Amino acid sequence: MATQWNISFIQFDGMISYANSTSGIGLGLETEQLIGRRLADFLVDSSDYDQLRAKLEQLGYVRNYELKVRRSDNTTLWVSTSVHPLRLGGAKTLLTTMFDISDRKQAEESLRQSEQLLRQQAQDLEQRVEQRTAELRSAEQKYRSIFENATEGIFQTTLDGQYLSVNPALAELYGYDSPDVLMVSVQNIGQLYARPRRWDELVVYIKCFGFISNAESEVYRKDGSRIWISENVRVVQDEHGNPLYYEGSVWDVSDRKKTEEELRHQRQRSELLLLSVLPQQIAERLKRGEKNIADSFAEATVLFADIANFTELSARTSPIELIELLNEIFSAFDTLADNHHLEKIKTIGDAYMVVGGVPTAMPDHLSAIADMALDMHRAIAQYKTHDGKSISLRVGIHTGPVIAGIIGNRRFGYDLWGDTVNIASRMESQGEVGRTQVTDIVYQRLKKRYEFEKRGTIDIKGKGEMTTYWLCDRKRTYFYTNT
Image 1 (cartoon, rainbow, N blue to C red):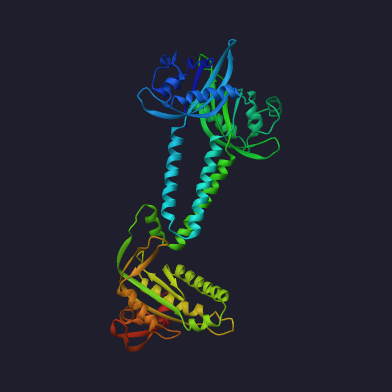
Image 2: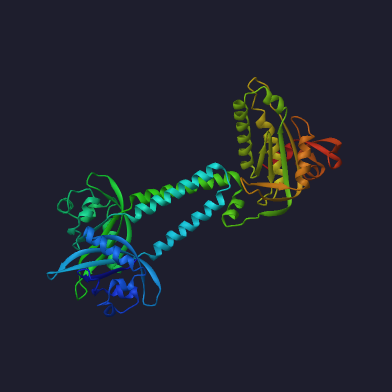
């Protein structure tokens, strides 16, 4: 929480006539060393002093004005400055209140850098990601504008919570016509808070530490509506350290809270869209800044599926009906892949590719792929063409080493390479409608748990003669003893 500095000036010659101890600590000097110095002596940019003075002469007060100051050791920090005219002993004095906001400025800069990195990583994805990134940037700009121009209210209360004084800005903030109306209407400051005993919680903290900064609460306005406020409150003590009253400043942060919620929502949507394109592990690595992602896997199982007679089907089906049908089928396949803890790689036209054991190792990816194939045949049987004809699949499976990684600079995707992928593709393309063709290695590893039918030796394009099998079903004895 920020520390409040109080510094007083005689008229506006900028000469410091009073400063509290925290002001000296903040500027790296003894409090006595501040007396007689000018505010401009501590400003990094001397023009800020002229602007601050012009603003004060124009409005009669200054609220939430941000300045960059230089400490005695030449380090710099940001402060939020408010200047209010007071009369002390008949003399006109300007009370200047400063809060160290360096942490907030650093956090804002970190937020901007983080969001910039996220946008850079996401810019090559689908058009929807680009649109969300632009919305996020706009929301950030809106948040900064609202926050920097927030209206600050000032109040003093007794130790029992009765208002001693309020300024016009606070009355306007709470929806009252004037400070007097606010003080008459609100008998105790605690009744403003939407959460019961919220003011009591703040008082406990103030009693322990002497002040509280940037405490956010939901409060009622005169019309019964609710807003979010952030307030700084401190206890004012007499010369003996006895508490006299509380004083504080308040500003409306409702729009900021709403913007933060919108930002969280937009981030969630961007994350979901990213995960719809890439596996979660790969998406996380991209967000951490990895650019060239390529991994070797000694064991993985690849499945290719293709809708039989798709060319004929597309010729006698309208484009809209065809897309709707493919979307229903592939969505069902996506659900099966999730259920079996498999990773969908891509769809190409009417072809569907899924892998087990990549990018996360799993103990029995071969069985998971086999079950996926059986479920895909069952799922496809539920669909018909618009003219009532059945739809069937050709499926191919092979297991072995693969390489997986990210390719492309625009609309990049996660893909697989290697002999295993090529053979699995050949198993599908040289298979038969309604059946799943597998290689001998798949058969050898699964023959105790699944029913197979030997197809025999066939000439596989690019590989020569290979012995293949048809995957039929799980063996009942195995099924019942393991469920």
